[in-house]
Length: 66
Image (cartoon, rainbow, N blue to C red; front, side, top):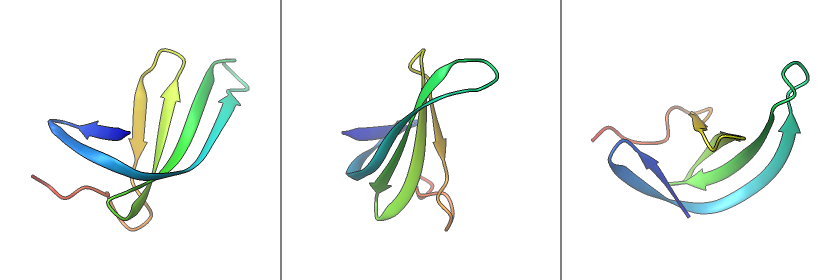
């Protein structure tokens, strides 16, 4: 498994957790993955349409600039 940010591909070291949620207001479902990528912890939210959003780790954005 890997994450693509722009034109760079980062291998996922480990998936720490995967949970499914349903938004109380909209009723839309989404999945939240917590992963180790490059030694940092990141959260990836994937909605029903397959769109993904990457959240930075607590110690800063996980990927160095190109």
